[in-house]
Image 1: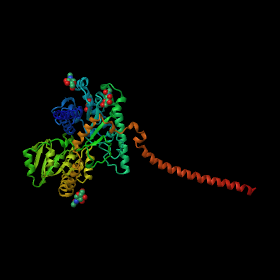
Image 2: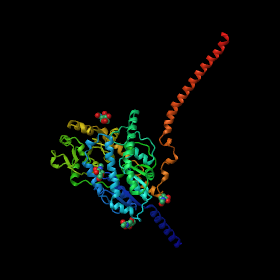
Image 3: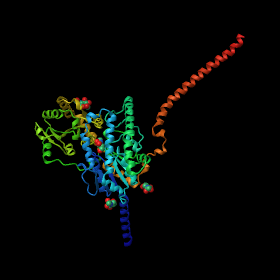
Length: 527
Ligand SMILES: *[C@@H]1O[C@H](CO)[C@@H](O)[C@H](O)[C@H]1NC(C)=O
Ligand SMILES: *[C@@H]1O[C@H](CO)[C@@H](O)[C@H](O)[C@H]1NC(C)=O
Ligand SMILES: *[C@@H]1O[C@H](CO)[C@@H](O)[C@H](O)[C@H]1NC(C)=O
Ligand SMILES: *[C@@H]1O[C@H](CO)[C@@H](O)[C@H](O)[C@H]1NC(C)=O
């Protein structure tokens, strides 16, 4: 009896341990982001993986957004940081006019990202260490395709993180044949694709981007891939179809509804799993004392400041001076510029805890994805001044949800800004909509981070979970490109044409026959 009990307990221990060892894995995380903010997503995800017992080796840039995580073996690629400086020196305004010029600059940038990682001494010694084994490679999903070679090298499953959410190129990697026509990727194509005309414009735009990817981005990544992983272009294209799972930083409740295959997962808000930075006592006091309400103003990145009109700061200061609300302003400008005592200026502000404060009634933002997710989560209406890339699209979406208004950065006068702020503060509909949105966004079966981790481990448990992918080999080209749809369309036209043709033919033959008949008839009559 006693032995039996012990045996059972022993068995239990073995089963638990067995499960434990079966479920933890060696994971290689490769993040080439030289700019900081995407690490805001990566960091808590890696922390969670470590907390779950996985052994993580991480290749990344040495940036302050990505401090060392205990238990992770960090390989820092110092040169990635210099890339950011290249980027800051680049004069966007002068160079962006043509899409092709922009594309070749961006392709250069991503080529440099991949190259610096693959040539880093730390990374090279990892690749040459025969005892290093990984069953999963996690990386930033798009543009640095040469890095997919890590997954080939270790025969590991490939998991991607998409900090800007989905786009047509990510759909391709996931095997998501759903049309992206209603959702193209970059700055210019931000229409929702509602009308037929917009859909066509988007289609043209996406086709252009496809060409850019095919002829500008990919050849350079392929070159690196071949060189560093001693492989051919066939295996490169094979790796591009190998993603087990892609985590998208978006959620349908935030106004971006799209169809996703099972290995495309929406985990927008997963960075909220990170403990937020606390308010300083001074800031806490400033916000607590805002009896008329407070406004949080952040145009996020320093780098973007050169896109603002030259009198932007003066305009904002003039407006803030006329408000009875208190303003918390995140800027690298010096405090000595403050003319009114209702403004609290610091370079870095604990954004989430500020948005969480009950006195904060409005967020003035350029509309970066992380910012709109945080504002939605904490139910703070937004006055938006989008600058570039996805921000226009984000602003449009937030406006449609009724929680924001957006202003054109280049038509800012103190009157316009003041009018915008007053409207946002006094029209109750924005705050009401924001509350409803926050409820919808939080109403999920699992928190976004739990979802991300659960599915990551699902892929580990099922050795890549190939069964989650649409098997494109089994699918004809016609089906993949939704050609069936076109054929139905053309089929209809064709069928109509056929019927019309048949009718015409019948009419003509009948006419001819009767003519012939008449002719035949008429012959004897004449004769
Ligand atoms: C990429 O690297 C090359 C060579 O180091 C450099 O000349 C170029 O400016 C870099 N381009 C970008 C966009 O970082
Ligand atoms: C090679 O990898 C093993 C296992 O990860 C590690 O213990 C060892 O220190 C590595 N060797 C070198 C030279 O980096
Ligand atoms: C690669 O991994 C898969 C699945 O984990 C396994 O079936 C296959 O045998 C491995 N291939 C090699 C060459 O180790
Ligand atoms: C409040 O804003 C909403 C949405 O922009 C608008 O439809 C409504 O007319 C506004 N109400 C007032 C009183 O201005």
